[in-house]
Length: 75
Image (cartoon, rainbow, N blue to C red; front, side):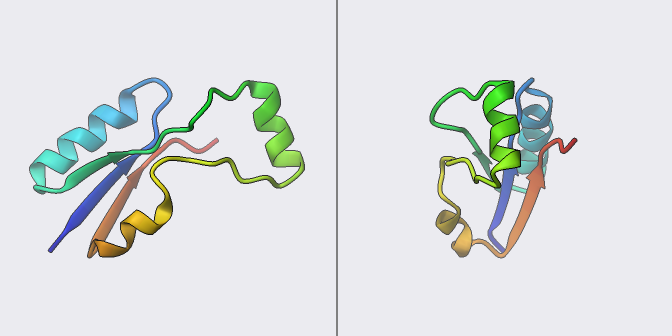
């Protein structure tokens, strides 16, 4: 079974956790990154105008995995 462990981390905590889980389950750790830095103001505008920020890698890369685990902070 191919496992992808995905992390989005501003402080590095989620990245460290995802890296540990990926090692434990012999999965690939994929880090979600934004091509440019976003300020709090741009994040608020994205929410107000329902804009989706561009991220790397693109989601179509994930179609080859049987199990996907996501580590990110919401809220």
